Image (cartoon, rainbow, N blue to C red):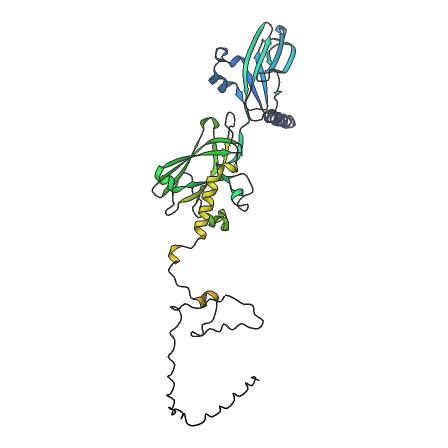
Length: 379
C-alpha cells in the first residue's frame, strides 16, 4: 500500500513538472473562439485588448460537440494581411469534443506589429478573427536622453551608445522649461524628459508614453556643470541625483545632463530615432565652451603678483642674480625681477676726494707719459 502511494505521488510530480515545462516552452497566445464577442471584432480597442499578443505562436480552440460521434470537418487558415501571404492552411479532418489546433509558430518580427486573419471552418460555419502579432516586450534595456554619445565627447567615458545632453542654462533661466526625447535600446523614443529651471535650481522629470507601458528598474541623474572634471575624474567623481530632485547649478552657464536608466517596455508602435552627430553642433559647442571656461585663468588671480624666484624654483640671492651662461649650458629666457619686485639697491660709499694737481706750465716741455703695462692673463 505504501509503495503504491509513493508511486502515485511520483507520477503526479512528473505530470505537474511536464505540464509546467510545456506551458513555459510553448509561449503561445490562445484564441478561444467561444469567449470572443464576434460583434466587436471591428473595434480596434477590443482587438488590442483581446486579440493582440507578442507571443512566439498562436493556438485556436473551439467547442464542437460532447461526443466524437458528432464529429464535423475542421479546417484552419492563417493569412498575413500586410503582405497578402497565406502562412498556414491545415485540414484537421473530422473533429469532436473541443478542437485544439496546437501551436502555430509565427515568423520573426522586426520593428512592427503584423496583422493576421485567423479563419476557422467548422462544418458549414466560418469564424474569421483578426490577430495582431506585436513585438515582444523588451526587458531591462538601457535608456537615456537624446544628445551626444559620451563616447563621442571622450572615449574614456563610455564604450556603449548612451548619450548625454548639453543644456544652455542661461537660456533655460529665461524660458523656464525645455523637453528632451527619452531614448531606449538605441532605437526607440519611449517618452520625454521635462527639464525645469527655477532661479538656480534645475529639475529633470521623465515622462513616458502610455503605449510603451514603461517599467523603470533603476535611474540616476548627473548634472555636470564642470565638464573638465568629468573627463579627468570620470562619472565616479560626480554626485548622482534622483530624477525629479532639484539640483543647485548656481554660477553655471551650461551643464551636461546624463540620466542612465534600466527599463522594460513595449516597443510596438513607438517611433525610432536616428543618431546624427553632425546635427548636434550646438551641443558640441556648449561642451567645448564649458571646458574652455574652466581651462582659462580665473579673474580672482589676475592681480596676484608672482615671485619669479618661487615660480621657477630659483634661490633668492638678495637682489643679485648671476645670468652668466655656463660654457655647456644653452641660452635660456630667464625672467628678471621687475623694478617693483627687486629689492632696494644698497647705497655705495662715496669715493674720497682726489688731491688737486696744479695745471701744467705751458712754458715747460711736455713730459712723455709712461706706456700702459701689458695685461697679464689671469692664471
